[in-house]
Image 1: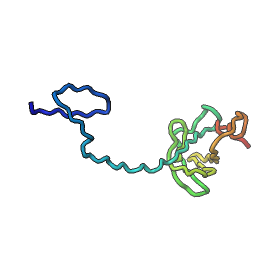
Image 2 (image 1 turned 180 degrees about the horizontal axis):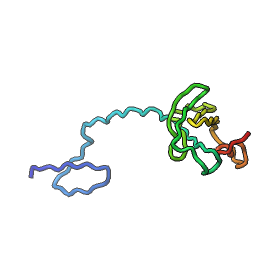
Image 3 (image 1 turned 90 degrees about the vertical axis):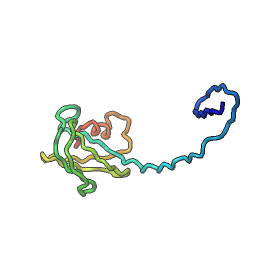
Image 4 (image 1 turned 180 degrees about the vertical axis):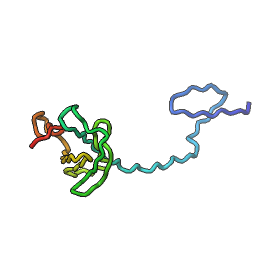
Length: 130
């Protein structure tokens, strides 16, 4: 008969027919996909009055500062976290001022030291050191 069957697949296939013709792909251009912009880094800081799980500052209004300049404001989440939405690598510290008057200096480190008693590890767990 004069009927034709066209088939394309990315896997293997088996065909039974009276004749065969193999051709390349149709003239369909590949779409140009624009490169995605680099993702912004985020930092999360959990604020609390004591280290560990005790008394997290949940739903607390705050102001966020970088180098003394206010860069944001918000409300801590249910875990007492402040989110820095557009962290720039190399920024050494942020400051947070809560509506209740508490003030936090949040030092930023690319990596913490492995010793669990090191100041970096202890402050990362929420301990306030003099």
